[in-house]
Length: 229
View 1 (cartoon, one colour):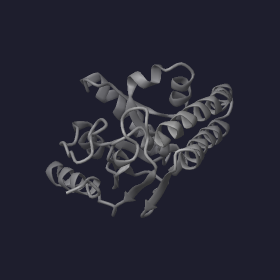
View 2 (view 1 turned 30 degrees about the vertical axis):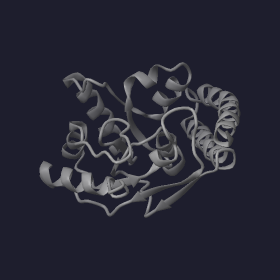
View 3 (view 1 turned 60 degrees about the horizontal axis):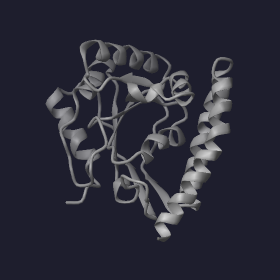
View 4 (view 1 turned 120 degrees about the vertical axis):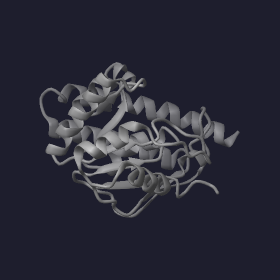
């Protein structure tokens, strides 16, 4: 019952507070990118504040968060880490499902933020769009964040990486920073969230130029480091 009440209060407060923040971000987006970045960061801080103080969900970050052009290959267990990308990185280019960009107002802001869209079917055209946007992000010295397994994965599961990661690695010729996390233990699918600590572990940088089998094996092992054995 306590977890339910916490979740209810969080949902009401976070989403009501998000309306004016996202609206202001949408208004500033066509005019000033620095202002858009500021509002996006402000929204992510609002999310962290409400999740910490209303849900009792705390964040522990291990390792160094890169702020320049690298590929950040992360585990994905919950919606929590998608918003955390705006909190942890100064100016991330996040690879995101294209359908999310159709959400009114929020989707517009995400596009202006420089989100990299990818379709679920990973068609050739979709891959080309993703690669072009990623190349622009590299040119602008932005970290490219990709959830390498493609979608949210239940705790304890470790599916193969999606081909989009290998494509980015081959095209961009950038180092890779793998990110392991355990958000699924706390931020469970469904309405009710549990109090606890979520760890995000930024691993050692992996150099560019490795063959596909080696880079996928190293990233797969690193992002699953916090998975229950």
